[in-house]
Length: 337
Length: 235
Image (tube, rainbow over all chains, first blue to last red):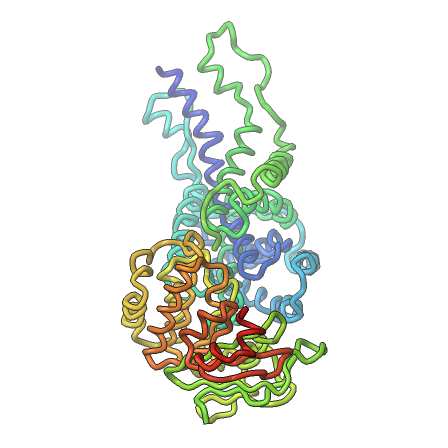
């Protein structure tokens, strides 16, 4: 009995909690991708770097707040900086939209052209980030690091294995649930949200109903800015802020959006967790887990790891390809935006 | 002077040839006017020109005595002209009720009341109000489309082939609904392929051929006119 509990504890500590955290971060990015796709009708390749851009402001402001002595008690100071980072992010997005994307929108360019334009935006954004903050790795989390330490857990439960719950993990999951709930409430219950869905569904008829496309586009970028910044900051708090990693995260984020059915925000939300759990379950070394379940004589010599963690992007990529081949409309039923 | 009037409209798509030339169409409140004619006669084009979806090369469009030729389609919608396109005329991914709410997007008040009115006019929509429109049948969708267009309490309703692709029974039902709408003092212009049935419920009709007015008259006149019968109504 103890063995089974110990095994489960190992599994929760090393896979479930990290996957829930990572999944939440991917979910925010995936909703961002899906939202832009549904309303503006293109795959935004600048997603990763836009998240990085918002996070950059949070990092810089965190440093500034620390020097002038503002902190958020036991919570990371970065949470205080999020609103300001969001504003900076939204301004940047609206400027990009006005000077870059709107030109192609008025010309009614095909989506492929839009996607290529977003690649351009991606490079420019990367360059701006490198000029402002540089490419190096930064940790900017402060406040209380742990909510639950492994030793405390062991003492309370008397198990051999412990569960560690980092505050960044709890904050990520909770904040994601709050943001996503607010967003779904907005899309489904408010007049502006409904007009966005109507515009996404049938642009011409939306125009004939008096919906102002400029307003819809603006609101979309605003929501996108909020999602990108929060997703980016949460990822940075949990791991660290390194611009190049954000660019790499685009693959799992796109995979999550496509698994969920591109254009479907709820699917993207679930898709984030699907990708995260798949990545972590397939790259986790099950040796310790199995050692509790198997008799001593059968104890494994190898790590029991299906794939090296170096291959985690291959997992997102494989899921992406399989979903596109088997169910291109996504594995979750449901309406798009 | 009629309530809503297209006078000597000449228009085409882009730099292409004129699809309609010197075409006249008018309608009064509480009247149904049908635009008929063979394929490619410019029926839909005439309607789109009146809505402002294509720009006139010459001629004008007047609403209640005001020249609106230069007004954008969105602003014409605000002035009380509502349009039901032939295809993609509903928000397929939204519920019936949400479709109506979007139809009343520009309303500042009385949204609930107007939705109630629409439900009275189309009891079916009340029954299916929380269903996704994409799951409804063709005839039911057309009712949603009509309901959406009426939510702005328009003075002019333009219908592009409202009965395209529905069965004869559903067609009769839709026409009944259109007559009900007319009785609420709305001016209705419709383009129709089902010429006989359309003329039956219309006060007046226009027959267009190659973009020009060929015949016009009351529904009955056109129905009994031997030449119209021979060329368009199939004997």
